[in-house]
Image (tube, rainbow, N blue to C red; front, side):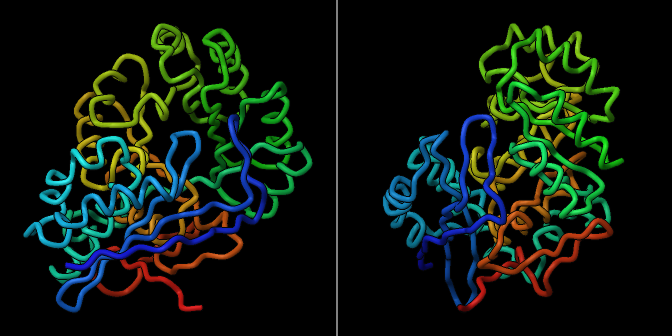
Length: 338
């Protein structure tokens, strides 16, 4: 087994703004595993909010190199456990490695990832398309640029309700809103009363991640279901969310990859919560991986590659009508030669 990686800049079509950051280019780390004529690809973007950089991700990968290349692992879950301690403070790097491990493993099995997991691609929910924070005119323009049946609207401004009211004038699509920890419990409850009338399906992470007392109030009194994001990072967080959120959004990079994400999804379902997997503006490498596990989900947010002006990879193709996977086994993503 041979490990390699490369840094790729992902240029965005539009400046992407959420409650705590803006960016025009997203840098990402592509990890590659090669063995016996097969290769697997994985990906993780950097993220300043979580302190994840190219430098600390590659540092952790180098620390795990001997185990990755000479550890004698036969299954991605085995590799994940073998390297758990090395990546305990850097799940983003572990995600890229885990994704590559699943890709090469399923290629060796001669199966697509969803086939190995015994999932039916006909059950994939339609992804939302994300509208980042901007001026009202630009947010309307972004929505008109991509006619989509479901929009996820980033909020966390002084005029959040005005934004949703204005966007509603221009579309009959389902709306989902993500406040990215920007509201108080009182605001969330009050806003839910208006948002439900505006055709919003659910609210994602309205409060700060550790405001459990406030979330209890929101859970009990909101007119809309509430979904955890920042409050549900790793496996131990799933149980904590029961009785505080109606659903959880699992991010592969935050959780540490496909391996723990699958466990989180199954646990949430057993606790009566709905599930979603979200993206972090990855290329088609990361998005393709999400698509393979999407049949397990109630909702999915895998529009990351659609937000790019240039995608360095090809893989899954997503339209409002269907999700089309690349031919061949594994995750089905490959880098595009310059």
